[in-house]
Length: 200
Image (cartoon, rainbow, N blue to C red; front, side, top):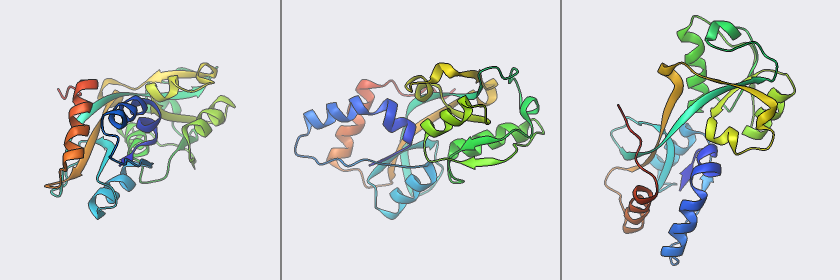
């Protein structure tokens, strides 16, 4: 199974523990990475299913919405208010690699306000992003749930995005027509433990 880093860190540890208790004979491995990598893994058959930023519109895939994430911009502690892209046009940002859906979302937020980020520093972890922003070196975008789970979250200023960009939905996806008994049980457990995201 594949997952976004933030989902693996914050949303699914208790879920995986519950699944393993109920299905001791099923071996469930978890790999993490950006949405693009996880989608490719499901399409290629390397992953049975994956938690990705959705919805995913691909004829070979199907899935269900499972979590709603509030996305926030983090800035150095004494940074001026960040209310729109033009407020920070030209500032350096910290993000995952180019196939990260959250990075694309951040770039769209800038573009929507006729703004552009400055240098994009590619990072391998949210902890690294937080450390760089805390040191005053730029901005980053991440789910509030991920930020609040990390030591040091009080060392930065937090700015919610405008309503158009504020919420993203995490989906569990799989290849169309390949639902196994163990995946069906996993989805049922998900539905018991997490109310599906509202897609208004």
